[in-house]
Amino acid sequence: MNVGELIRSANRLKREGKLDEAIALYHQVIEINPHFAWAYSNLGDIFVKQGNLDGAVSEYRRAVNLNPDCIWFNYRLRDLSAQEAYDAEAVFFPKETEKLGLYLRFHKRIKLTLAKEQLLHQDKQRFTNNIYNGISSYINDCEIERTEKFKNLKIPKKNIFITARYRTGSTYLYSLFSIVTKVKTFYEPLHPQIVSHFLDADHTNIEEAKAIQNHTFKSNYFYFDEYKLLNRKKLIGTYQTSFANSKMFLSSLDRFSELKTYINLLIFSQSEQEELNVLQFNRIDFRLAWFRINFPNAIIVNLRRNPRDVYASYIGVYERVSQQKYRASNTSLGEFYYLDNYINFLSEICPQQLNKVELNNYEKIYILSQLSDLWGDKFADLVIHYESLVDDPVGTLYKIVSYLPNFKLDFKEDIIQPNKDRVNVWQNYHSENWFKRCEERCKRIIEQILSFD
Image 1 (cartoon, rainbow, N blue to C red):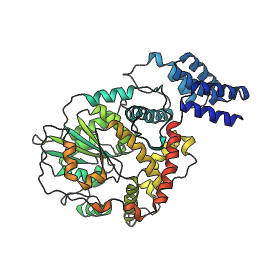
Image 2 (image 1 turned 120 degrees about the vertical axis):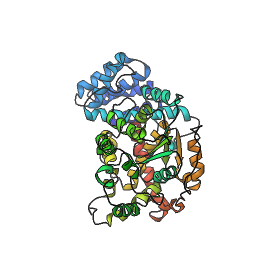
Image 3 (image 1 turned 30 degrees about the horizontal axis):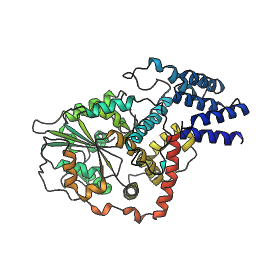
């Protein structure tokens, strides 16, 4: 075999856990090409798994000497060298360059989630087609241990945080809670235009926006009405437009005091008669570990939807928005819905997997949905499917409030009826074979991302 065949075989054996066989092949690679830095780094990975830390440090040092500009080699060496002084209650990741920190936070968080999920579901075939293999046994369990500890504490629950990707039906779930007595609801607290636009917009423009977005609200609702009841000075002083798209990935040990102060402003703004806060978020899925630790008295409800229907909903709204005079004609769907923000971020931290890949909009949605589900499975208290919500909205609410044994579900208005014609609408856009081809391609990309060592 040539070097390429040897390294591919060695990597496969490493992923399968056949470590001794992989070591032999990596040594063959080094005999043929002693300047191939990745062979030394992969040997270091294996030695870590085997508990041979001295050997691992030696191999990582060889890799760094051959390629001193590689951030991965430098990280492996520094991370391993610092393990003896590691404090589980201190900073979760080493303070390297900003790009390196983002890279490692995202990569490790995926692996932490997957490692736990494989243990919990190893007999249930949780992950189809084995696309989520390649989990490193040496990963640090700090995130899991801390979030599980807080998740299991018997802390009285006073808040419900709804978390979802965009266009999943979270507005409808929010609207249902808005007609429950003794509940204070907040719609999209991290929306970037709460203060700059919606609080000062006239009702004509707001009604037009509601028609375009096609959300399911109670009949007398105007966008962000609830924020108008807050102290405006305090709201402006704590709210930041950057909450929507900065620090998109947070670990349980990250510091984000500005966001915590803002959320607390909403939570503690209720009157004496109101007993429960419901905050409906979009796009905080990759921050759920942080929310779990910083708000242990909140029930985290993860709402998800068939990504094909999410795609159909994106397209429908984008087409309506594009017809409005204020919408720039050159704004793409990916730019409009932050899809490209996340995909570009992924491209930076997983360059070998995504830099040269051209994704269509559905593939972007599908990849983000699959990764989002990993965080939801790990850090949420309850997973709700949109299809179940619209089929039985009241039953879904009872299921959620069952986590609040002392809370009585009582409606102050008639139940808002769901739009049941929004299930399986993807069939109006592409054939099933087209969606399947996109999904199979995405599964291969996700496998590469998650198995990359």
